Every structure is written in structure tokens, then in C-alpha cells.
Image (cartoon, rainbow, N blue to C red):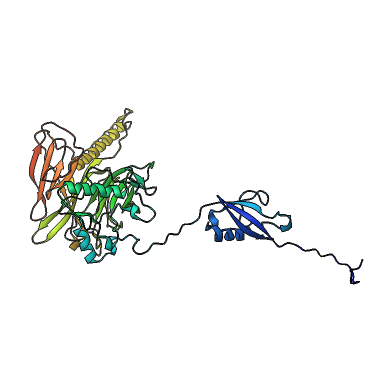
Length: 466
């Protein structure tokens, strides 16, 4: 055939290269355009530009075009003409939320403050400066971070993250304010704070819990460093560091269990600074010394077959040499004996002699272990005696004497530092040791119990009480 102009007739066969589709995301409907042979990764980036949902979080469904969730390597359509206009695809995923904070809205920490700002903070008994200086974040004020406010008036524990739950900050501040006013402090109307008060503590209140619930390991001991870091020792050997309601480090004790954590005194400087030990952990036959940053600096071994039963730290003051820090520990037996070791009777003279020798050796080991449990081992530390940066300790054994209640000295159960003296306690009573001029411990006093009893805990209290 011919066209109207007399030329040959031709057929025009055009192919569509793109097609509009509809993206359903929650209650929103968005328009998109797909192209012939478009890979799934390109579509995900196009969706990310519209919804701010990262490609890794996107789950894109369309049973008419592909099976299951769309993969990055999938080709959406080789024949776009076969796809109906405004085909609907479904997006499942949450968008990233980027919250920009102004300098006035951002939390301020003590480490970032000037000396003048710190002085102003100390003048305010509530721990919060005036409004012109912005909010100050204390150890438990996680909810003052933007987006974590909890000001609904409810009196309940609030979950900040999977490791930390605590009271709302407004409730903490209200309780502190009430207690300050009850103690006789005067409220300053200009700053809404209370001055001239002696207490800002939440005594008797559960303010915060830290740690992972439903964990197999139990917390055996906790202690707090001078800088506010909380140290927790677990029975699986982990030593966790908590600061401002967050776990900042997780270290491992050399043994398989941490039974006790004790804090060293500063001894005229910052404990844990300059390679000095800040705290010690004990358990499973060993004692580990740590800096305040969580660096392991030394290990002290217990007598084989024993581990630490109780541990304490203290300092000895001398006018000539200054303060010297000591670590004292008593021990308990962990060696297991075989009850069937001597079950079978000897059959001849040679076996009888071997059994007699084995029984004597076993009895000697048991006597040695009992002697260890009656002793208190003291490690004396002096920063001036460091050997090439290594911590140097001088060891000393303190052996409490038997009291009138028992013929032999019982095993020492607990030790404590009380008013500068070393107190050793057993089921018969207490024995108090003080340091001589040559830094040796000698018995100062003995207190006998009326009845034999076990000591579970021994701690110094305020007012020279133990």
C-alpha cells in the first residue's frame, strides 16, 4: 500500500522505557518511576531519597513483579509494557531521624567546664547552674538528652536502654528539693535552688539499676571510684565499668570469678593515675590490680588450693615517709579432696607403706592450708618504689593469736580497715593491729565474743563504729 503522498506505507512500533508506579508506605502513597531493566538497588536508593528509609531497612513487596522481598540484584522488569500503570508496591521500614541540637540544647559535662563554671556549680546545692549557663548533666540524668525526656508526672522506673532503668529526672530533683527544704535549707527564688544545706543524697531510694537482666552471671561485689565510676565484679570473671548510667568498659579478671572489689585510697594523689592502682579484684585464687581507666597493671597469687575470703585496703601515715598504701587479705580453702582416695585396704606391706606415706602427705597439705587460712597477708605499696613503671609491693604475714575461747587460732573470716588499723575477725572474736614506725603490724587489742559465731560482713561505719 501507499501513503496519501504516494510513498510506501510503514508501521511505527514504539517501546515504552519507563512506567509510573505507586509506593504504599504506611498511610502514605508516593509516586515513583521504574525503568526497563532497573536493578533493585537503584529502586531502593530512589525510595531512600523520598522516605529517608535506609536501603538496609527496606522490605519492598510486589507479588505481581517479583517473589518475596526485593533484592539488590533483582531486575524489576524486562518488559515495562506489560506492567499496568500505577501498579502498587509496598514498603516496610522505619526512617532515620536526624535531630539537630543547638549549642544551648546540648548537654554539658563537668569535664568540659571552666574553673569558673565548676565554682558556680559547687555554689548550687542542687547540682544545676542557673538558666543562663544551660543544663548540667549529672551521673543519672540520662533523660535530659534531647528525645529522652520523661516529664509525664508518673512515679515509676523508666527504661533508658536495655542496660539501664531509673527514676525520671524530674522525680529525682523533686525528692532532692523536698529533702533539702526539710533539712532547713533556704530556697533561692532567683535560681529556684536551695542553699545552706548539708544533704543532697537520695538515701533509701532506688534511683537506678544497671546491668543486663536474665544474664547467667551474678554480681558479687561493687565499688565506686573517686571519679564516680562504678565497678561491678561478676561471678563469670567480668569486671564492668559504669559511668553516667552507661557501661564504658568490660574487662576480664585473670581467674574465672570475681568475689570482691575494693578501692585503693588516693594516698596524696589521684588513685589510679600515673600507673598507681585504683582498685583491686579478687577471686579464683588471684588478685588483680587495675588503674581507674581499666588497665590491668599487676597480679598477686594466692597460696595454691586457696582463694581470697576477704580483702581490704588502707594507708599508713608516717611523718618521715608520708602515706603508704597496703592491701590485706585472708583466705579460704578451695582444694577438693577425694573421699575415695583411701577406700581400698592395702593388700601387702608395700601397699601399706605407700598408703601411710600418702596419708601423711595429705595430712601435711591439709595442715598447711589450715595455717594459710589463719594468716592475713599484707602487701605494702609505695609509689616511690616503682621498678621501671612496675608496681612494687612488700609482703608481710600477720598471724592473729588464739584467744581463750579456742585452743588453736581459728580461720580468719573477714578483714577490714578501721580508723587506720587492721581488724581481723574470726568465730572467736576480733583482733586489731596497728602499724609500727618500721611499717610492721603488731597486735593492739583483742575483743572476744561471748559465743562462737560466724562473721558474714564487717564494715566501718560513721562515728568510729564497726
